[in-house]
Length: 220
Image (cartoon, rainbow, N blue to C red; front, side, top):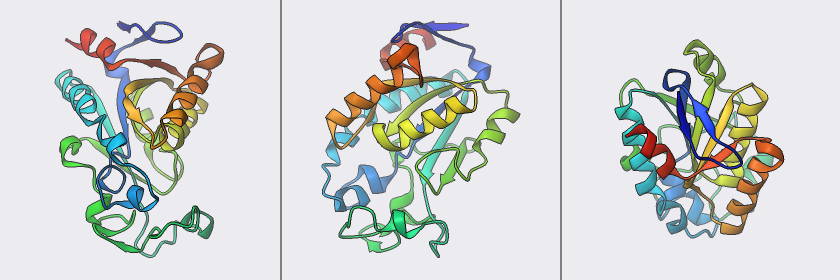
């Protein structure tokens, strides 16, 4: 049993029953020229967490535990992207439009890929999700159940949208979740702070939170 200092209380888990879930660390969100920047966001805020995510991923792989990557990705014909989502925010480039890194948030396009620094290894689970949550219209729950997973450690972007949605979905399905605070970020720092507070409020109503250093210390 691994125990780490967390907020609001200690988080304990067994490696064989725990997966690291890395949410949407994609070029379209992290790199200049992607979808995130077309919305008017400063993508350097998100890229700043990459070194911390790399350290956690390397240690987790070294421990031989399960890794899950997610990508927000739509079918080329956009049949899984309703107008209410595609038109949201009135961006200069919409989902499916041609951008500097290919069609925005379309599966298989260059910008839709996970950044090279966190690229999946053969055998790691990669989930293409048409929504904000990792469980909606994906096989993730079934894959985790088959692997005997009960605990999920989360990192990725953005904190208040896809990360928080995925953690809430996980909680509703019975998983015990932990968010690594320095391995997640938002284009709006105040939104990240609020989301972290919401998740761990009321006795970790959605999940606990912790610094990645606490995890790395125990994995070492």
